Image (tube, rainbow, N blue to C red; front, top):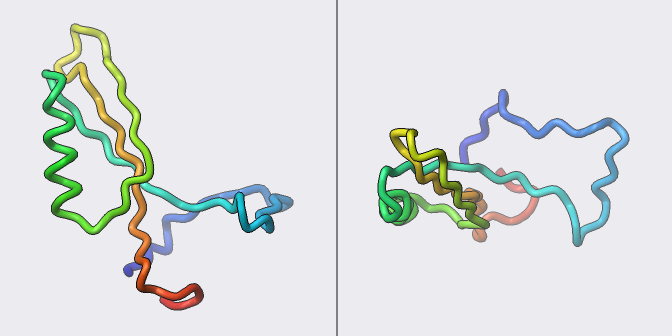
Length: 89
């Protein structure tokens, strides 16, 4: 997996992430826009099928009607690979 050194999660210096059950896990977000309700879902389905990602969550927003793309689907995902053991790059 490629690592981007300029992208990182900033946390306060005194942040305690030692509890294994509630540790911070990085994730990404991709937006899909549409002028009809089904469009963002169609685009998201194509994108997920084409990429090796694990979908974590989604959210849905309807923008004001005067917007060109008034339907927005947010897809939260990770690139986590179950085949990689902890500590390996």
